Picture 1 (cartoon, rainbow, N blue to C red):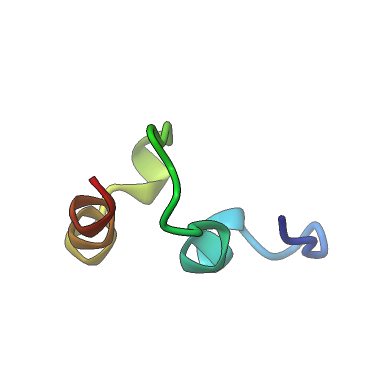
Picture 2: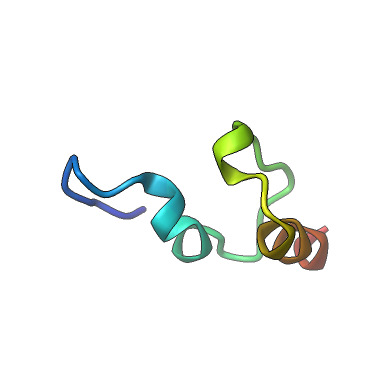
Length: 44
């Protein structure tokens, strides 16, 4: 879990939110980036 001020988009803390124990991750298109896709593939 991460807390950010309203002016910080939660995609900025995306990597901090992943623990490696996720069975599923749901996100909208704001998270669609190659780097993030690669991070998610490492988890699954």
